[in-house]
Structure formats: C-alpha cells, structure tokens
Image (tube, rainbow, N blue to C red; front, top):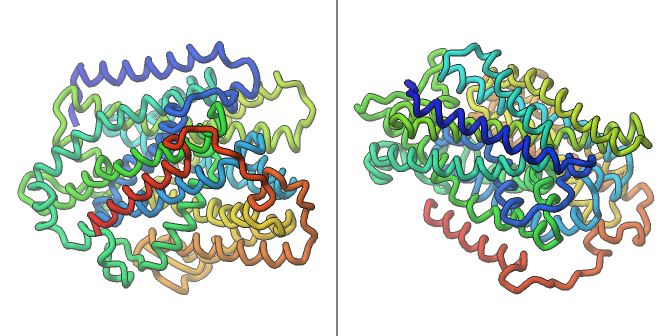
Amino acid sequence: MTLHLIDYVVLALYFGFVLGIGWFLRKNVKSSSDFLTSGHSLPLWITSLAFLAANMGALEMIGMCGSGAKYGMMTSHFYWVGAIPAMLFVGVFMMPFYYGSKARSVPEYLKLRFDEKTRGFNAITFAIMTIFSSGISMYALGILLQAIFGWSFTFSVLASAGIVLAYTYLGGLSSAIYNEVLQFFLIVAGFAPLAILSVHKAGGWDGIASRLSPKMTQSWQHIAKAGDNPMGVEIIGLIMGLGFVLSFGYWCTNYLVVQRAMAARNMTDARNTPIVGAFPKMFIPFVVIVPGIAAAALASMSVGYALPLKNGNPDYDKVLFSLMAQFYPSGMLGVGLTALVASFMSGMAGNVTAFNTVWTYDIYQSYIRKHAPDEHYLWMGRMATIFGTGLSIGAAYLAQSFNNMMDFLQLIFGFVNAPLFATFLLGMFWKRSTGHGAFAGLVSGTAAAAVTYGLTEAEGKGGWMGAQYHFPSSMAQNFWVAIAAFGCCLVVTTIVSLATKAKPDAELVGLVYSVTPRQTEEAEWYRRPATLAIVASVICIALNFVFF
C-alpha cells in the first residue's frame, strides 16, 4: 500500500478536524453533566447518526468485511436479524423508561428499578466490557498504522490513543458524538466506492455467485444444520443466540449506544433515535460485507488478488486493507484510510466516554466519594478518560490472539450483555422481579457463560475446563455461550424473585411497563416511533427475502 502526498494531506486534515471539534466544544463543558451526558441537548439527526456510528468502529469495518469473506452473506444476519428488530424495540418500548426515569446511565436505571448491588455488578462488568471493546478498536487501528507507515504496533497504538484522549478529554461526550457523525459520512464516502469496484471486478453479483458456493451468497437457505453453512450455526442458534439474546442484549442494554439516545433533547427524539438510525443501518451491509464476499470471489480468479495470510491461514482482519491496496488510487486511498481511522477512533472514543460516565457516576460517586461538589466529579470524569484509555491499550494486545475481531467481540457480549438483557426484560415487563433476583441472575448468568465457554471449543479457543463439545466455528460457540448466559439468568432471576419480596407498585411507576400510565403522543403521526418502526420493519423483511 503506497501513499502519496494527497493521501497524507487528507489524513492530516482529519486529525486536525477532530482535535478542532474537541477544542471548540471545550468551552461548553461547565459541569459533570455537560462532560458526561451532553446535558440532554442534542437534536435527533445528530443522536440517530451517533447511535448508528457508535457501532461502526473496528467491529463494523474490519470485522464485518472479514466476516463477509469468512462467512459470506450470512453475515448480513448481524444487521437484518441481529440489529434492526432490537433497535426498533428499544426505541418503541424501552427508551421511555431510560429517558423518563431521568437515570444518567443504564446501571443507574438498574439501581432505581432493583437495588444498589445490581447496579454495582452491572457497572463493573460493563466497565470491563468497554475496556475490551475500546482495546479492539485500538488493535485494529494499530495494525492499520503499522501497515501504512511501517511503525511498530506499540507506537501505532499509543499514537491513536493519544489523539482520542485529546479530543474526548477536551469536549467529553459531545465531542465524541459530533466526531461519530463526521465518521458516518466519511465511511460512506470511503467505502461505497470500494464495494462498487470490487463487485465490478468480480463480474457483478452474478459473477460472484457463479464463483462461490451458494452457501456464501444466500443468507437463509443453508441453516437447517450447522454443517451446511460456513458460519457453522443452525437456525435455533442463529435466531435465539444472535437474533434475540446477543442482538437485544447489545442494542437494548449496552450503555455505549443507549447513551447517545439519552443525550437527545426530548422524549420523542430519544425514542426516535434508534428507529431513525435503523434506516441507514439496513443498507450498511452493502458497504462493508459485500466487499468481503467479493474478495473471496476474486481470490478464486486469476486477477492478481489473494486473501492475506497469517501463519498459513486466511487473515480475515486484513481483507479490507488488501482490497483498498488493490483498487484505490492516490487521493481515494487517502479518503478510504481516513474513513478507517475515523471508524477506529470513534469506536475508541465511544467506549471511553461510556466508561468514564459509568465509572464516575456508578462506581466512584456511589462507592468511593458520595458527596463531593460537582467540580470534583467533572475532574474525575476527565481522569477516568485518561486511565480508561490506558487500560484499553492493554486490551489491544489481547485482541491479537483472534483472527477475526467480530468473534472476540461477540464473545465479550455473551458474557455481559446476554444475561443483562434477561434482567432488563424481567425488570421492565414483570413487576414481580426483585433486586435479589436480578443480582443472583446476573451473577449466575455470567458464570454460566464462563462454564459454557470452558466446556466447549472452537478454532482452538475455549475448552479450558476440558472441551466436551466442539463447535465448527467461534461464532457458533459465541451464540450458545450467549444462550446459556441468558437462559440461566432468566431462570434464576425468576426463581429468586418469587421467593423474595417485590417493591410496591408506587415505587415502580416510570420503571415498569404495567404500572406506568401511557403517555399521549404529541408528535405528528409520521414522526411517531410506532409509525417509523412499522415502515422500517417492512423494509427489513423485504431485504431478508431478496437475499433468502
């Protein structure tokens, strides 16, 4: 990959721009609320694009392109099954409780609904998850800068961490959100041409289909049995593991994305944030997955392209880089690289801003220093930004042991988000669930994930308790880890809740669906969450049929 002056200029302009956003917004940061929650002041178009872009870091760009080459069109399930339904659900049903409760974070909602120990456990596990997620983005950007400039991996990670730290330290959540919006437009400009060029070189979609097995170009027709498709997952694992547990666990309970909706200026905008974001989300597979599928087809042709290798095996994390080197000329290469850098840095910033909020409000203020002045919590939020970035650097090295970052990230979600979704599902829609039940369920669900991972093995990972079952892929293993965590948490929470005393209805108003009065919709019919959700559902179902 050879860069020219114009490519360096594009990259330099981007770095200057993101730092300038942080510098410009710093004057608006006058309290801990301004720094950590944006003061609930952002318009819908900003929050909806940020809600979408917060998920478009290393996972989306490198991970999904690599998964396209590894698993084919089945990777689209991470969008049309594993994202859109959950995004619509959180907007229509769950956001009224998040936003209406005035909680500053997801763990704080758990305190209001259940008790302090449930909030504390979730805050700690979520903080750990954000560190790992941020580390994955750092790892991705590290190998990119290493490939471009020839820098060492360590220097590449430190350089990227330093820039993210600078603009999040200055502008807080608002700085991260505005940079996420910039990132979204850069991604479209940087990768839509790559999809067009790679598919055209492979002979169009018909050419790709003629060179690859139908299992790589169809999404639903080969999932009756795990051995019939490249992902190694059957329909129950797909629907329950990805479509329900992992998907709803991520989009409905992950404070990283929920935080963007909670920054909206009113309830209607907060509810519409994930729903409006679902519309562009449906079409992202054509930008990030299709190039990976085209790469698999090109590798079978005599056109001078081959999948990158690592220790003799395909290195799916570098498929996107190899395509850019193959197809992009000077100038366009700079735009594509800038889009990659933007997505990785945005992924880091999103996780760091979620971490500093949960650390400051849900751990530090709750357990370490309860009654300090607001200026002190603003200071602590900035300090959390610094040491959260430092911990993420360590996590970047752990990500090196996986050949596909998507596999690693889904495993983390299985440990944290899967049991948490069971807790929220019972907490918001079953008033009989109790704090003792929620805490016992979360602990047992996380333990169930660890035991399942320890008793199973896939691609040389897991099995630390003695592998009793071998999955055909790490992704299939991740799905069942999530199912076990969710199921265990659901059962244990229900049993313990029935054996313990529930809160009176008066304390659950605004927190539980059945005891909260329905609010009259004030927005025009075409701006109402239910209307927009129905339209999005129809489009999503149609896409599934087209690529059935």
